[in-house]
Image (cartoon, rainbow over all chains, first blue to last red; front, top):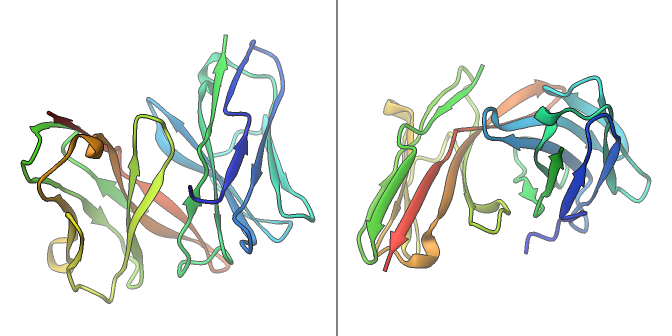
Length: 114
Length: 117
């Protein structure tokens, strides 16, 4: 158990809908990362937050947004869902979000868009 | 941009065999970190090891060992006396700077290891 929690574990929804994925980092970690794992793209970095502020963006679609709250939990919002958004979404956390840190991953949320 | 190549996509072995998972990376950074993660059938990503670019010392942890060679840009992972519980997808990853001191992980495509009894 990495100490990173993600809810829900599974999510099934329809095209065009909007969903919210939730992540709680390990105790003491200030930085949260979101990654998407799909069959065709593999594991791809989406976005990073540090202590409530967005720090870096990767290949995140405009339909996707995220935020980190004062209690350090983070939410990833996916809207206007398409079939291709079906994937495993991981949250990871690290102490301060720098290269000296190790990113610890949560169990993931499996999103299925029908 | 950084790149991680795991040439083997799938390996099947019999229990107690040794198996080596290859990882080759490309980077222009002089300071970087390499990682191995394990993804068992249950789906979570489990951290196994981190190695920084200045430390080429090989590491052993139980049945696991890692061989880091900067000269060949490789960071290979060996499982000795494999067990059924080692069956998983293994990912090699490399840090990539995003500016402002921030980093992301660049992952290889993963290698699926099946250990048969």
